[in-house]
Length: 253
Image (cartoon, rainbow, N blue to C red; front, side, top):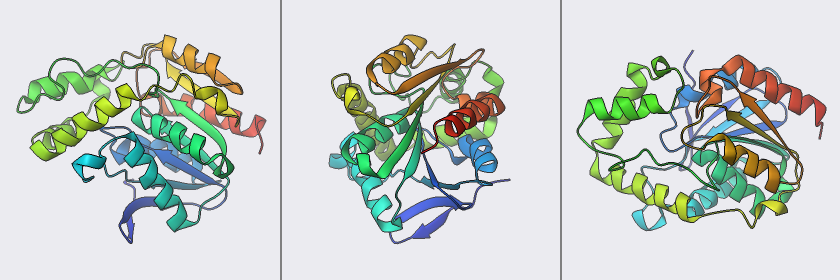
């Protein structure tokens, strides 16, 4: 079942269910389909909100982590959200950390999976290389332990994105911003309970990155999923949801 995208003012977002807010922040190539397993599981007990980050629409001068954090702040203010659980994958985790550091009173818990912010392997070579479908398919498959998770629909979506020069310029600007924005000295300021879910076979943010986040965030715990790469919520949705649920139940706000 595909997710319904709503529009209000200048924002596009998913808003499903009722209860405490669980805000999901997607990555650089974060299709909404990446989160279907999470939304469908948690909307029974939470209000699940996904703001569509304006990665491809931002003014090029604002295309970076600060611009994405400010966008998230404007979205939260518009929807009047508070007492949120923030869950972010890859770049979305990085944005979630920056948001939490700047707005600690708005966040009750943090869930990071394959987050950037300390170290990441970029997709290699000329990133992203335009015009070669086979190259894009190979790079998307590299994100998953089981290459078949990289469906034709997902590869097509990334390929279409990389055909646009303006979109590519923004992708590169944001990726470089993420690499420059190292959070090692700031993570100790995160006081909320934090769950780190990492793929044991992550090639983009390897397991050592998960260990380093665990060392630097005071109130954090680290869980690994075997035979899993950079997107646990897609690759092993049931295991991922169970780990998150156990954490949310044990760490009641």
